[in-house]
Image 1 (cartoon, rainbow, N blue to C red):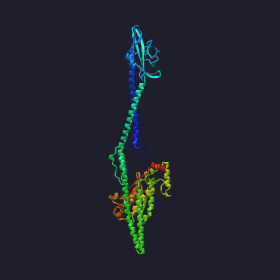
Image 2 (image 1 turned 90 degrees about the horizontal axis):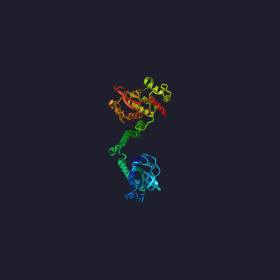
Image 3 (image 1 turned 90 degrees about the vertical axis):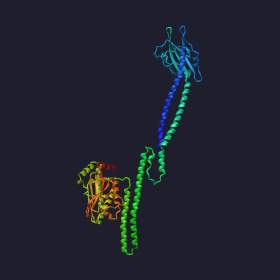
Image 4 (image 1 turned 45 degrees about the vertical axis):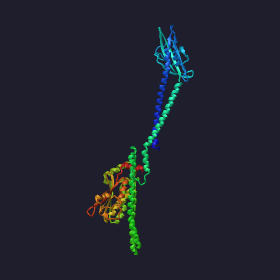
Length: 529
């Protein structure tokens, strides 16, 4: 990957070079035209002198009375050879004639001097052309003049030529000067571009150095005021990730502090109970101490499992999701915790969501079944219900999520209800359709949590409720774990009033909700599988 400096110079310099080349070419053409115009003007001067030196004699004959200064300007010099010819055109050609006549009588000069490729105007306008004379490249000017004397009409063609060596030398010198000037300009532009790019990138270099000298523990945001406005969005994005990383580190530090605090007390209790059992001479009382250690180890194991679950649920990695029936997941959780509720003498009930009870759900399932792939997926789900004849082939509450995580979330909700509800309490787990959501409610008639304190119920290691506050064996992690897993699956946990209890209040209902899988989602999920 190219650096910004290399990229900018690569983009800027070719354009600058192209502009300089075009400008140099235009300057060269302009200078060449000026040079040729100057030399042509100098070449036209002896032609005009020769034109004006043609006279008639008394007998009506044409003669050339060349003055001395004309002879001087027609003299050849080193590198500049000059030639001329004065030719009479007989008969005279009319104005506008384009046909070049045969060579006429030479009045003066070199008879072999090349004639113009096209016939010049009789109005005396000069015609310039390039040719070769005696293997010498020359520039030639032709002037045609009509002469009148005593009723006679005569016509003469004046040709003056000079070698182009001097012209070429002048053009070559001008071209060299132009190239040198452009080379200096190009070098200056390259230096300015390099310096300008380097100067513009100094804030980025300073920003890089600031980041490099930072300690690993420094999570302060970068200063966006010291960088160009174009780089501010990048700095803000970096600051956003720094803030996220800082929050993650803070949460990890808080989690480790809370975990160590929560594990320290059980370990101290186990150590004390073990020391008591070792000192106790009575075997029966020693056995009681060992049983207490076993109970405490069970609670500690539960706490450790919850801590691990909370750490996993708090991760931000993506979770593989599949099409599930939330009704089946909830029913399996109820069957798993049924023995535990019986141990406490509690009445654990299950209310399944039935498609026949919800016309909207029937229509939803019918639309889902219209897709062949969705129908195959739904049929496979129906066949996997362990032979339950009461279960419908069509999923009752189709959702997309991780079965293990949703099972863990509902397990924590139900375990909380069994743990905090008193002996003989009634706990009801019900699944239902609520608009475009699938909901599973775990409701009890236990002590409950007052409405003003429910927002604190999801805090880690926080135990709430008038009746629940007296229960010290809970860890305060169940609702935190359940909400974390629910949100990882695009859902959430809400707390509502539960069933009326014997104290005249109401228990607590913890509701897990997930977005209902639409028919198109079922089809796409089946295609992915």
